[in-house]
Image 1 (cartoon, helix red, strand yellow):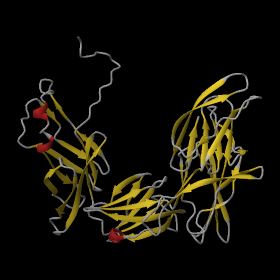
Image 2: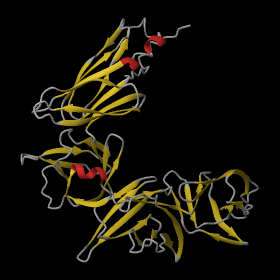
Image 3: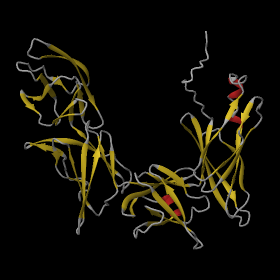
Image 4: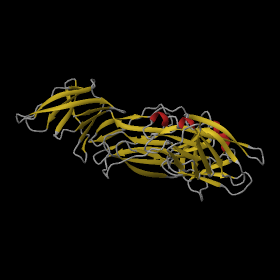
Length: 442
């Protein structure tokens, strides 16, 4: 029996044991050695150079006669150590040796400038990522951009020389160069910034910085920090996030009002899509209206003067309304990103391909819902307020109402429907509690 395929279409994935990530702010050279291991049959790339922000795989391949000798291969990473040298523009011999990259965790070492005897910290963080170890060398201060827009961190030279810049793409992070963690930094939208408003801080002061709102380049965000054992993460986050948890797309219309003017923006949100609001800040009176092609909502105030005041967001149509479910995950910060998740209190999804009528049933009162829409794939969605029971009937003349479906019972239940043509439709009803609201699928 053949066990090796010569099929040209067969995919073979090579996964290196680890990836080295240079986040020190300077070019870096790395050399790896394996202490006390039998190197016979091993093709091993021991040295590599990495530019700031660059990642490279540490390649290691055994010859074919050693590849199945698992007991001998397993110990290789356990015996691996690396040495590194930082290519600093003014200092030489910034190097560290014998760094363990096998054990997960965070280590902090010191680099010494020989000319000034100044010591700067270097963080080695080893963690699992996508089937391999990721080894990140960085300064102890890392800026994480959680916005959907790129940001620029300007690092002001302490000797009044030219600034340096960190360009951070959306949802990525970069470390402040290892020898500049006590410099003044400012946040901008572009490197060649013409913006008059930007936020400036002493980088070291951010180590214990509580959350606060900042403004830069016409954008508003929350700046906060979180201190870990060997490093500090500085987060740049949106003030408000709108998330659509409804099973259909909506248009989110947001207005920001001040005493002098009103600005508006609109975003189309598919199911589970999020929309970050960075155009307006806490001094704006920010309101939200959502809409579909069939119906729209009332105006909802995102930041009421009294946070405990009661507000409802609801769709309205034909002088009727259906209240929506809103959920904001709690935050430990006084000033924080507020995520507003929007869903239905009760949502009925018809996946049968049959035309059905859904009616809320309570105390012998049967009420149809005007809030119904058909999606592009033919699936029908019907919205209700919080209800306890539901009755269903086919839309044919002479069809009969089903027995009530108890929505307080979660699970999958069979249901028979009579369509008026001596035909019985057997459907399954699935009642589930999802993130916001109750969902019933047919």
